[in-house]
Image 1: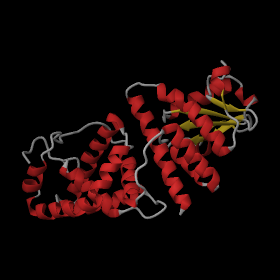
Image 2: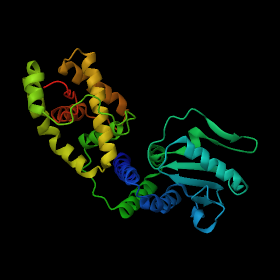
Image 3: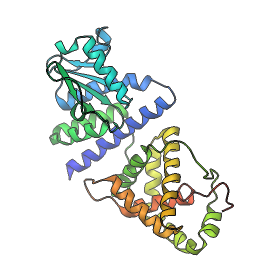
Image 4: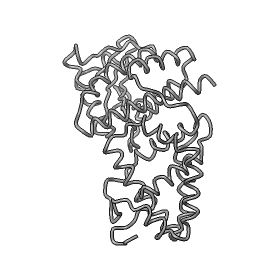
Length: 319
């Protein structure tokens, strides 16, 4: 379907922008955040028929917001910080500046993935308040809103993204979509950065031949079989996905710790644990326009197993 193809391309561009901003923040580079204000001003004006302007350029007292539309009476703060303290600070500054006199709605737009917040609203509904569910947006929320556009606007949105971001697009196959979604889901984990007692130097031959000797033939044949189908797709996705050092590290540590727990759950049986990981990743990914490709998920996990990021060897064990 034309709509599904357009949405997949829009998702590719916005996901890349989110990852680029997160990577820049990890290096304390703020230039992208500044450019993002103008980018989202133009994107929202195009897709939502807003009349947003860069308020913080012309109004010094509007320090709590970046974009404002006095016609539609909506104000927007663009940020790459998902912590609720940022939302609370924005709301407080908005009220202190009496911006509720100009705007009926305040939106915090997170260039990333918002967290699960404990509170449901801020402020006094009788005076001014924001809804955590409806007034805090992230890239996923934007994609849902864009998904409701008519085909003409959807095409215009994609044309804008292509012009502004200038990225090459991966071929639109279900394998690619699956792998992109898989990496996105796993790389936003909150596992932390501690490697524990896992070895950081890969030893795939020692692991496959020695540690999993009883399953070595199965693992090797499974990898070769799936590589022929999904190897090129994974290389393509890796070439188009800019995670940055911090998120790559989070993805690695998450896979170490999570797969190790699942392996212990299945008494050290890598075949059973691999299937469980595959099933759980498929559940984490949710539903797409079409069913995600389980074979692509399985190939990715086996590829990471060979790289020693899945079922990691232990530092104290010569495996």
